Length: 193
Image 1 (tube, one colour):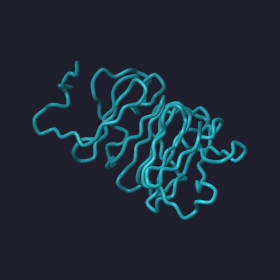
Image 2 (cartoon, helix red, strand yellow):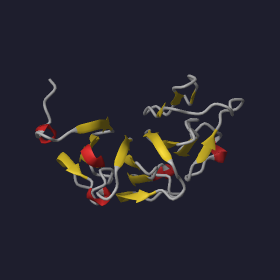
Image 3 (cartoon, rainbow, N blue to C red):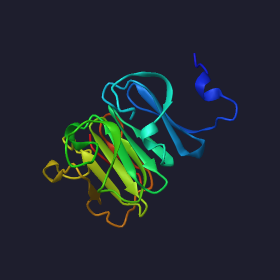
Image 4 (tube, rainbow, N blue to C red):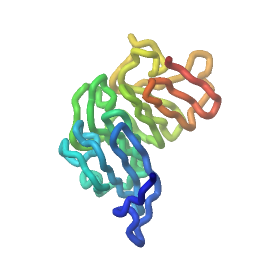
């Protein structure tokens, strides 16, 4: 039976968007604040700890930023700001945080490679970001074809994806189901298992 989240039901408190990851949740509230709660064992909540949070808690590390999107994955999170910045934290296995390594992070770290990020998505072992020019970048594990290019080309930093024969297509929305497939919403393209 659904139950009201009392913490978020405070008069004058406005929840803009909500996202769910694997055993954790996140939301944005007025003035671009990001809140997370649930399992924090991999640092995916962005609170500089591995503690679980029973109630929504503001991500203080990003208090100076206006958060517009929060992408929740299996054990990692990407926070996107109104300036097109992407900050990621949590489990870094397979380079799914996009920093060019596999380091796990307890705090949201700015991705220096991605500029002008508008939206994104996180899967189990991979992530993606759509830039303001509608190009798609993917990073993390490509073992099941979920990055949109051969695994030998896979890089932890992110590569622009243009499916073969479709260079004129620009991505407007994408999701990363836990199974690993990507879906373009604009033209119905799909890759992965």
